[in-house]
Length: 298
Image 1 (cartoon, rainbow, N blue to C red):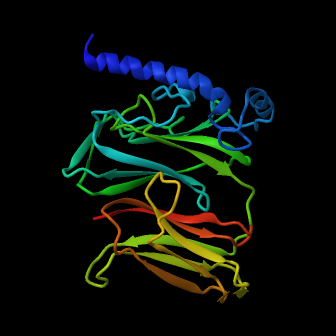
Image 2: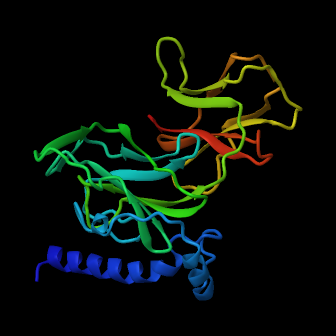
Image 3: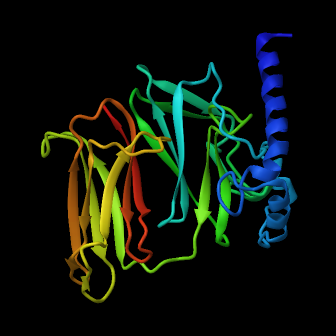
């Protein structure tokens, strides 16, 4: 048996073992990692009437509710999956952190796939019932280049879901990244937020984030000082935000239809991939992410 064959068999065995265990704990309704055996049964009885067709788990390639796995001798690309609540979409951030270009090849036009699970059952898969051009596709990432692949989610009842991202050019044996998605009842939010990364150039000597806040309502907004926004930065996948960069301010007054721009300087960040979150506590009183972007600091 070759070393490659032995590794493939080991990966399949790991998928089967973890997949069986994840029926109870992969996407608990009450929160991450809180479903016990009895609780899992109760949660299963409360499942919404949404479920992917039986064949979606097996085509175009089989999948299981397991965490992300990147081959040891893979492409060298790095991956981060996130859910953007204000757009109801999942985003896979792919970055080439190596010192040389990386080219990936897929057998068809299908480059990425996304899946959602709840209590071990597949409820949605992005590629289900879609056709893809049957032609090999090449994609090259320059050193330090990052790209974002997006997919809008369908309507989902409130609850916690287990999300996976597959990057076909890396592997289809397992997702390259996974995360939990918490769908909440919509809250009233009169402001619209976007955040963009601006690299150093002719007009600005330092890299920075540009946050846009727009009052999309037809009335002026005047809020007490405790209601506002935060712009925070962290490494992809990290639990805590960096304490050396970011701001937090009150909204104050914003006229109907008006737009406000905020810039956050990124000097001093070490080279590497980062995630920037804009958080607001308007509507719920608790801070939640309302805009997000990824960037690679040279």
